[in-house]
Image 1 (cartoon, rainbow, N blue to C red):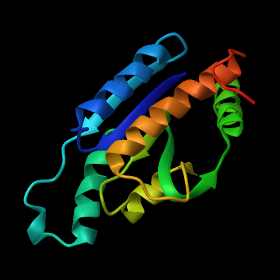
Image 2 (cartoon, rainbow, N blue to C red):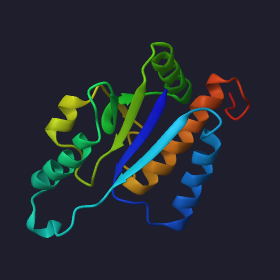
Image 3 (tube, rainbow, N blue to C red):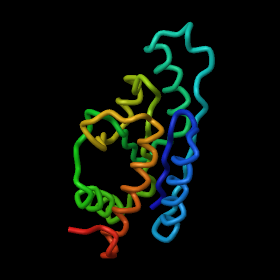
Image 4 (tube, rainbow, N blue to C red):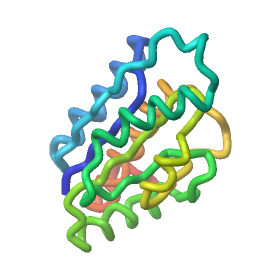
Length: 157
């Protein structure tokens, strides 16, 4: 199973980049992970939030094929414990899902067209985090999930 982590914008802070890279390196032992950072929109002051979401949606949807299983990281998504997230991934792997795409949208969230294309929505927390921090939290949780699946001691109960 291939996992793609699709984000709008780039990670700017060095400490976040370092943390993300740490987990991406560790994940190479468990899965094929591709990170795609779509460029941030330019000259957004002239655009409404809806127009920004629409333009971001065009970029996002170009990266998705019909066979991809699309999961939005969204504040209104299902809330899972780390163990339940691991079970979710394992179920997708067992059901022969070839490609999972996890997506973090722009500052205003997702356009309706992206919601319509999504197969699932997952919330990392009820709290709001910067999009840059979500990237670190997600890569850590992805790594944690694979260690849970493999029965390794990273996750403590």
